[in-house]
Image (cartoon, rainbow, N blue to C red; front, side):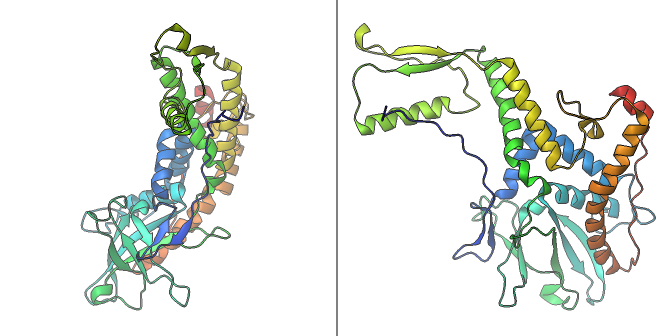
Length: 365
């Protein structure tokens, strides 16, 4: 039994934010690519994707009262345009960033631009535990070609010359974490990953003709350690993935006596996947603090939720807005108000809420 090898399914670990020798910026994850992993999760999980999108729609509503259509840069982007982008980033990453450009005299903000949060990295803290610079690259996977550009941290007391173009970096506080944020749904990252992988598995299984898995036993003696490792590596690459369920494996041997013995493994029954997917959905919704999938337009079998009652659904939605959406809006609004005040707009941001017909919503669901 000593030669039996187990193929372990690895979980997604929490990101490590650390200084790297020879680099001016702090690594955002072990490979400095953690934001890209969050993007992949968002794109691969239908439930997680819907949760993010529905929260975004609730956050931006019908736009910002009075000033929403004001232009804030040469690209003719409005405050509403910027607000939607930074809200998107705040939901996906737990933070957002802006490029703030001061006027020639340095007494007023002339333009603001949204900077994709995944393209910004924090500089190292100085002796006063302050970050004085941030770095922008359009592709952090290839910094040789796309060299990071250094920008000073937002500072309204130093706005002239090389300091006229600054980065305003906002992120929500997480205990034990510095410089970079963790998204609110961090506790369900493994479930989100699993949701996407199960979808790929089912798609691949159907594409491969719903073939069963195989156990392959070679009865021609124990190979050398190098041969064993090579065989294990080849089989691992061929089969240990959600993209390779039930594929056909061809073998060749010198005669029938040396032919490998092959046995089939029956696939898990349908109930197993129903229970698993229900559990995954429940944990993803819980991480987003969504009490019922119906609040975000989802119907998930086996999860507790609201009945077909418009009044009950309206009460639940109001609770969802006040406990989930408004706290996020408050953080984004407070930070954007600070920047807009530098443009001469001393106003409190008020988002026009979307109007919902709960009677019609119940009929659709």
